[in-house]
Amino acid sequence: MAKAKIQFICQNCGAVYPRWQGRCDTCGGWNTLAEESISAGIGAAPAMPGKSGRPVALSRLAGETEEVPRIISGIAELDRVTGGGFVRGSALLVGGDPGIGKSTLLTQAAAALADKGHNVLYVSGEEAVAQIRLRARRLKLEQSGVKLAAETNVENILATLKQEKSPDLVIIDSVQTLWSDTADSAPGTVSQVRLSAQAMIRFAKQSGAAVVLVGHVTKDGQVAGPRVVEHMVDAVLYFEGEGGHHYRILRTVKNRFGATDEIGVFEMSDSGLRQVANPSELFLGERSQHAPGAAVFAGMEGTRPLLVEIQALVAQTSLGTPRRAVIGWDNSRLAMIIAVLEAHCGLRFGNYDIYLNIAGGYRISEPAADLAVAAALTSSLAGVSLPADCVYFGEVSLSGSLRPVSHAGQRLKEAEKLGFKQAVLPASLNRKSTGEGEKANAALRLDKIESLPQLVAQIAAQAAQQKNRQK
Image (tube, rainbow, N blue to C red):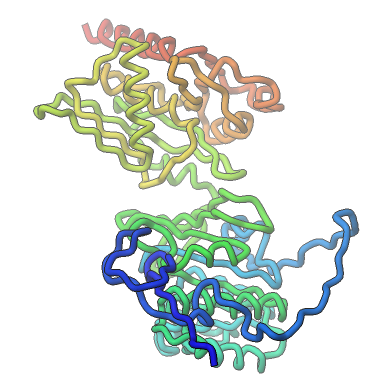
C-alpha cells in the first residue's frame, strides 16, 4: 500500500510547503505551518482517482438566456448592493470587523424575507439560539418566521437543510467556525474553511437556495482564511464603519450578478440598522460653511453620486520634519498633490504640518478628489473660506493640468439637488462625460479651469478681497 503523502500548510495565508519550517516565507508568520494530508489539503486529488468521468454537454456562446431569479428583501440599500436582491443558487460572503453589525443586518434581512413568506434559515456557530432570540427581541423581530439553529459541523448542517423543503435563504454565521469530518485540522484553519465553504456553495448550486456566509476580517481589513474562498463565492460584500461614528457602509467588491463598487449606507440606532436614503445629507449635515480648509467633493460610488466634505488643516510646525496625517484618503496621493502645488503653484508647505480628514469617517479611493483636496489645502494655507455653495471634482496630473472624470452629469445633478449653486471642474470635460448633465443642471454655474495654478489664483484673489474688507 502506498504511503500517504503529507504537506504543511500555513494557517494564515494558505501557502503549501513539502516540509515543516518555523517561518512562512509568504506571509512571514512564525509557527503557522500545520501538517495535513494531501487528500484533505489544498491541491488535493479527487477522492476516487480510479473512477472515470463522464462527458458533459457543450453549448455555444450564442443562445437564449433567462433572467436571473432574485429574492428581493425589501431593504433598498441591501438590494442595491446585491444588484437587485439575492440570486437563487448563489453564494455571498459578507465580511466586517467584530461588532460592526453584520449579524444585525442579516437578522433584519432574514426577518424581512420571512415576513414575505420565504423559507429562511439562520445557522449560527458563534451564538446560542437564546442569544439570537435576544437580538431579535431587541430589534422587535421575534414574531418573524425565521428558523434558527446553533451548529458548527458541516455534515449536520447539510443534513438539516436537506430535511427542509426548498429553503430560499440560508445564513451561516460564521464560516470560520465550521468544521468538516473529512479534514483532520481544527476549525478555522485553511483546510476547514475551504472545505466548509465548498460544501455550502455546492449545496447552493444544487438546491437553488441563496447562501450567505459571514466571514471575520483580519487587521488588514481582509476576510480571514484563504483568499480562494473569495474566488469561489459569487459576491463579496464588506461591512465597514468607524467605531466613533453611527453610520455603516455595505460595500460591494465582487458581484457576478451586478455592478461592483456599489455601496449601501445604514445608520446604527437602538432599534437596529436604519437605511439612509440620501447619504450626501448625512456627510454634509454638520459642516461649517465659513471655516477655511473645507471643500465639498462630488464623488461617485458605483452608480450613486455622493457629496462629502474634505477638511484640511495647514499649521505651522514645531518639528524638524513636518507631520502629514491623513484619514480617509491615500497618503501617497496627498504627497503628490502637495508636490504639484509647490512645483507649479508656488506654494510652500515645508514648514507646515498638514492634516487631511474626510468628514464622517468616509473613505475616498477615486482620483477625482484631487481638485477638492488641492482647494482645501490652498484654502487652509491662505486662511480664506471657500464658497459654501460650491463643489469640486477633477483629477490633477503631475504637470498641474486637470484631467476630466467620468459621470460628471450625475455629480452635478446631485449637487443641484442639495442646493449647491456652483461647481469647479476641469475645462477639458467633453460632452460624452457630461451627457445631458449641463442641460439638466442649468441652475449650476460651471467654473471650468484648465490647470491647478488657475484655481490657486482664484483662492488667492478671494483672500485678498477678504483682507480688504477687514481693513
